[in-house]
Amino acid sequence: MTTRRVKANHSKKAPNVTEFTIPTAASGASQIIQGPDGNLWFTEEGANKIGRMSPNGIFVEYQIPTPASGAEGLVVGPDAKIWFTETNTNKIGDITVDGTINEFSLCNVAARPQHIALYGGALWFSEAGVVDKIARLTTLGSYAEYNIPTPNSEPFGIATGPNPNFLWFTERNGNKIGRLNAGALFSEYSIPTPNVRPWQITPGPDGRVWFTENAGNALGALLPSSGAISEYPVPSPDAQVRRITTGPDGNLWFTEFATGKVGTSTTSGAITETTLPTPNAGPIGITNGPLGSLWAIENIGNKIAQITP
Image (cartoon, rainbow, N blue to C red):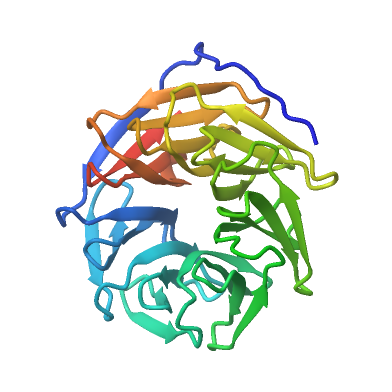
């Protein structure tokens, strides 16, 4: 496998940024997606809530029934509900667009479910506890687990790829990108740079699978046909790159938790960065959403930022 390094591009015009304050102080907001109703939905780990925000900044918050659930991953399910993981209580929850919440307890009490994706009409999620598994849950509550070949892999981010026949995930301890098909067959690809702690993963606009390197301070891109991985360094040192998505402009957008910045990369790896208005905002989650904008969670700033390219 080859590694390609590309310098940052500083010629792009800076995007417009608008911030909206989350009603609950110190909410611990983390993940964000666009819901089936056109609103933004997000997890509040510190407040134990699921939040909803309209594109013009109107908030509603819903309390999760189980205390201290550690709400983390989010995805829109096949039933038009928003499904979420409860890392601390080993449950998977769903919420309707009008705020009704249901919870499913996992049989494996050591699962610690993290991120979640829709694949083949079911919910698939990483179990980052001592179990090293990828799990599947149907909307009717049928639950199955599949063992990752690498022990102590700590699976985390998970997403379908450019080819919908495969599910992709990151292995934070294993320093690998994993692939799973509908028959539960695994493939794994080692990242060239050691100990990068790969975080989140997303299908890119170029047919590759893109991921963030939280400890490696870079973005990675894997070509599914060959498994070749390219890595692109983030200009700011020690940025703690967290989550990534494809934006409306066809570029990759990502968050830098430690620098308070949102970055964007072309598919050739030319990266620019934008500092959010709130100092030390601690951005984590980011999603492509309504109004042709990116929407990012400011975990420390306790805000949602609208970023328009």
